[in-house]
Image (cartoon, rainbow over all chains, first blue to last red; front, top):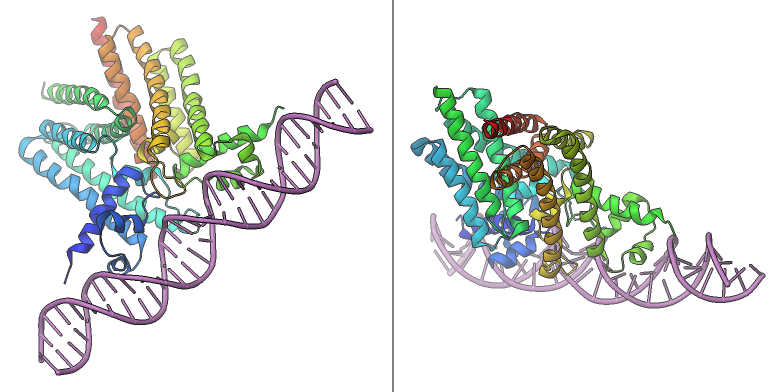
Length: 202
Length: 202
DNA sequence: TAGAGACTATGCTGCGCGTCATAGTATGGT
DNA sequence: ACCATACTATGACGCGCAGCATAGTCTCTA
């Protein structure tokens, strides 16, 4: 009967990974945090923590890509960029600069199992999910840029710059406890986009 | 007494945090990894893991800023950027895309102590060190940009863009197991720098 | 050459972890 | 009424962890 408990657990895992990172997020903590029954974790996620994290990454990726795709298609790449950045600013400010991007957290850590050793098998699987999510975002931005007349290569490079600089800036903002870096790169990225589009149209 | 053990421990902590992240790096693992005596950890770092990590962050920050400053002063900002990016590419490729930036790792996680809970006191101290290191890098790049005639505000924004995009890209490269994103942003960042400088001189 | 201070060896405590096993409860269909 | 199935409750197991304490060893100097 597809209970809501499962969804709460996934969303809670996303939120904890955002804040603490991958290895600092234990399944027991997810259970406490979401006030869900501890006994249900093995029931809903028979493959344990690995499965919970996998679903969290997929969920987190979609949470970004779905609204982004809608906006880029409807309002164009510049509006899409602005919204992309604003969304991250909200996450930062509403968490008092304690929350970041769960995908970045997984990309920067290595999964270490209960034996205290990195598990390459699981690590590869998680990185694959991170890669797919980032590629998805990049595809969306890239498509929007090509609609403005940019070449595929230029669109690929610019969308890579957007994603990596925003991801990096979110981390910088956490360290600085300020959204200033986000404002700074927003100005530069917008100007760069506008210039690249104008140049192509000339 | 000129003991090398201490230095090996700090360097080992840097390397492990680079690969695994902050919370996946245990003091005992540092000792195993560096083949240093376990009993010496409490001797050289009386404040325990916190102190070891603090020194690792300072060390890692300097490891970047010192060669960067030299190069920017001697060869200018464009050469500095190129070298900055090349250095990160080396770290990625020589580790088979398993190592990243230890500062970023700390910025993205929360320090969780042996009680399994985040420790805000220690977290604040670590974030402060990360902030200082990033600010140092930014100061160096910013100074190089102002020497080319850019305004302070523009120099601040561009240097923020450089640092955050490179940091973000290093993470993306780990997920993609490829240096392609780094090449992509290098092209765009160099073009942006050259254009910004030329525009100012006109 | 003897002693002091720097360094190393090793075991203990208490804790949280992920996983598994077992038992209990609720609910919907027949 | 019954029972299968979905879900929840709880405890045990073995592990690695950080921190600490105690005892042993080395080395430089006085």
